[in-house]
Length: 575
Image 1 (spheres, rainbow, N blue to C red):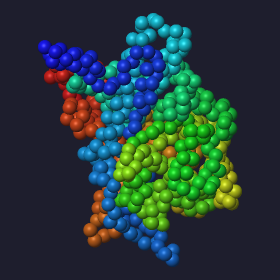
Image 2 (image 1 turned 90 degrees about the vertical axis):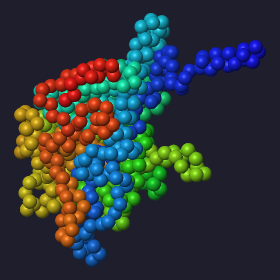
Image 3 (image 1 turned 45 degrees about the horizontal axis):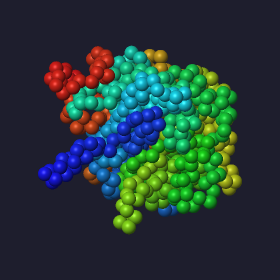
Image 4 (image 1 turned 60 degrees about the horizontal axis):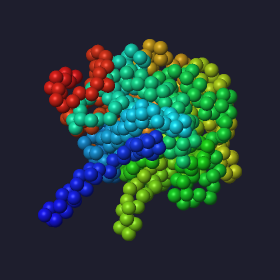
């Protein structure tokens, strides 16, 4: 009988214990703490770069300069980091779920959204109880603000990766969107419709505008690892730039930069801080310094990006991709490698034969067992910076035909890139409007055309996306300059892919080498309306009934926000 009593007591104690380690939200502070995990750890930079024109296949024939100045066409026999990179570069659906894969981005971004929704649901309950002090009411507002902006941001990245670029409120109703999650899942198996891009963007804006006024930096221990006020403004700048609401771009950019074109409140990144930083880790730390006025929000990701692009692998920032970015002369720099990147940590593979990598996306390794040398590689993303905000405002001015203001912002960015140790001063000249017009011209006989041609873009397809989206001849040189500067500013972080998509730019990837001739074995071109401009969602999601990213809608699908349980899944009409 005593033994039976002991057994009963033990069972009772066991059953009274929580079945897992999930956080119980009992007050506003616990809701706030939960949001520490409301940021995705997946790095979309690899997918974005592999899809863009910032990466080439080193195994495809290309010209290199040999010893003695001789130019020859060569190709290599380098191995890819893993099979997924072959699929990404060929714009194919991926079959692996590695750390930097679309599958991991999809699942981890929705994981972060689920954390947000869990926090918001419990915050609603806590506030409804009506027992909050004035201090807790203020904190609850700040928590809600961070949660809503985080939810908007994660859906924004997902729709820009896995759907077509935003066109306009009507045309985007015919492009498939993504499920917009606003409540925690309560069913084991839930089927989702993806809705359309227009509806997804509308929900993003609703969350962004509802959350932004509520954010309060005083509740953060390290504000730059959260959606602080300036980071939220920077996100609003990016959102309205992508939807071409240029007045809003300028309005929110002014909140970060001040309202005088060419003048940046608080300054930009001080590249003189890299002087004497000769070790890789020192240069990385300088880039991601929370005290830098440039860094508005940092994001810790689990990623092997540095290893994949900086170790002599098949795919790299090389050849025309390097000439379009860090390894070429520019309108104001007179050194074949951009002096700013040269002085801030540039990894060069095989005398640049195999590519380059800036330490702005360097790796920080977290050891779980130092003896065995195992752990987790991390890339700290500078997700929002003042420099991106500045160039976004310049772009908005260009599209509003305010070229004077646009030039002042472009010059402010370019002048700050010269903020280097004195030894680099002689490699720069001044940016002027005449320099912009001459360097970024379409005259193939121009003396510097060979340097500029990688960033002279064709905007003929913008009006096919939206009739009112037209780039004029007067705008083109300024826009080429702005997108070139953005390409440099956002190198490695995936933003170039988004810029190419939203301007309907077409580009080609050359793959492998044909047998017996100096030609690629295969070329893949993304035309302005190619369904592959939307990255395919994970195969297991499609197997569960989610529509493919390649789906073309024949009528608006507004059902992205309806959750359907397994019990009535048979009633669904899958498009």
